[in-house]
Each structure stands twice: as structure tokens, then as C-alpha cells.
Length: 299
Image (cartoon, rainbow, N blue to C red):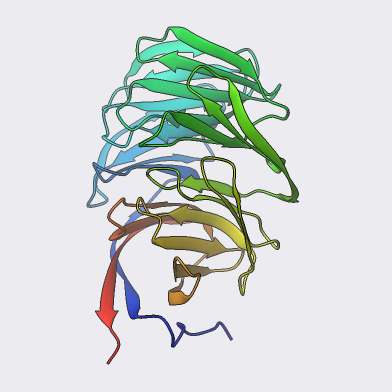
């Protein structure tokens, strides 16, 4: 039996499904334009879909090349996708291509900054490349391992990346390595709070591993279920975790369980709004589902 919300937690929360959008093919991932509330999703047949905050389709496009990943600017001004042969596409909000470049090797991670000014790209050789919004290459640096997770720190001039196993690293915007650490764990997801006061890695059976933007190790937290995905709120006060099964967990900063929710199918990807009031989940072999996350005082 999955554990109930912690009795010591000051509030409980409820996941309230608000919309569902079925895709023609199983989803492979999603990225959330967190301030705008729009959702970029991609499926196993290389379709990209852009949905508004109500789950309504705004646009879609099919890629002739194999898609590996995609990303959104938080303000919804720009989108990007990467391909298996190194293709990079900068996309406008109607998913038309603004420009196309190549990094020469399979794209393993993408990150757009909050305002759609810069695009960071990780590839299968461990190269980190940063482009500006006009497609000009600004930075080309080397990582110790290929980066499979990338995110800009919204309120600080840093970029955080992680491999699929064994490495987390922080770079400045010139590509200089600021710090790195080795982790004896597989890494399923990377999430960063607004100022970088909390960097969270979902490490499957090893639970959650946490750092701050200065490289301080904030420790590891075990959970009732292996942590597959994790997303921290902008203020670092709460954390959303998806396990390897069907459960979503909503935790406070002390990792007390405030709420849990059983999905119809396991999550393959998820997004969390900055104000921690909306959640979007991509179900395995199924659809995208939007939730409101509502607090309620204990009676």
C-alpha cells in the first residue's frame, strides 16, 4: 500500500484532473512553457504537438528526421527540437522552423533559457554548444560525459547538466566548467529552482540527490518508490516526483508527503508550473493529462 500524506505536514493537497488530450502515437516526452502554460510534446512517430493551457492543440508538425528531444522557453516565445543525426531546429510558436543547424552528432539534451534568447545543446560525444536566437554559435565546450539533461538556472547566469549515469556539472554562460560531481546512480531527470538554491536529480532506486548552484551537496533522500522523474517549484518549497509505477508524489521541502495520486499509466514525462498550481503528465502509451494542484487545510 502506498503511504498516505504525512500527518506532520501542515497542509494536504489534491490533484484535480482538468483536461486530457489523446495523441495519435505514444508520447515520448514533453516540455512546459512554464510562464505561458503551453505544452510541447513529441511522440514515437516524430510528431511535435503544441497545446495551450487548456489542453487544446494550437499547432503540430511532423519531422522527416528522427526526433530525440525538444525544449520550450518559459515565456512561450521560442521552441526547439533536436534530431538523431545532430539536427537542431529553432521553432516559432506555430512550430514553423526559424532556423536549422547541426552539431554533427545525435542530440541528447536541449535547453532554452526563460526568455528564448539562448539554446544549449548536448550531443552524444559530450559536446556542449550554445546558440543565440539568430542561430549564431556562441559557445562550444566539452563535458566529461554526454549530457542527457540540461537546464538554465532562471535567475542566475548558469547552466546545469547531467549525464544519464554518474555526472552532474554546472557551467557559466561562456561554457566554463564551474563545478562537477560524480554520482553512483542512473539519472532520470534534472530540475532546478529559480535561483538555483536547489538542484534535484531523480536517481531511480537511489531516490533524490540534491545540490545547490554553488556545488554544495545537499544530500540524498530515499522515497517509498523509485524516483523516475522530479520537478521542483520555482521557490524550492515543493517537489513533484513520479515513481517507476503509476504514482505522483507531492512533497514539501522536508520531503514530507503532502499528496499522492495514482495515474492510469506510468508517467513518461511531466511538467510543473512556477506557481505550483498546474501539472502536466504524459502517460505511457496514452495521452497528455493536465491537473490543478489544490491545497486544503487539515480538518
